[in-house]
Image 1: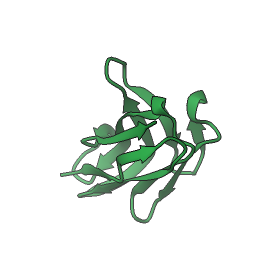
Image 2 (image 1 turned 120 degrees about the horizontal axis):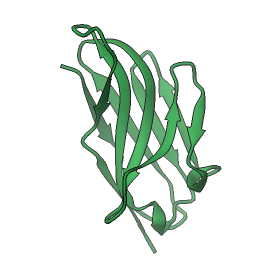
Image 3 (image 1 turned 180 degrees about the vertical axis):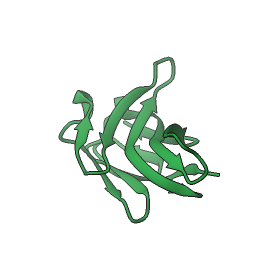
Length: 121
């Protein structure tokens, strides 16, 4: 069974930094894009950053210049380095990956369980 496991969330002060990690495990055949989403209370889930298997990245305007997404294809792991954190970055952050398991014939959306990031002022 394929799954995504996130780590690295927590409480940080305004202006601080955090690094999130998300590792895909299980019988993985191939991983396409890996992405980070977030959902704040009362708001819709939004795409924060994404990275393709080739390393092409994209970012939400609100995090450009402050967040950096990267991945280690050998480990099927994606990272989100967050800097200059603001109170509005407070949310549950979810890892997402488009993957194909070794027992499947199609690529599917997989989601992690979410990790809380709280930025205090």
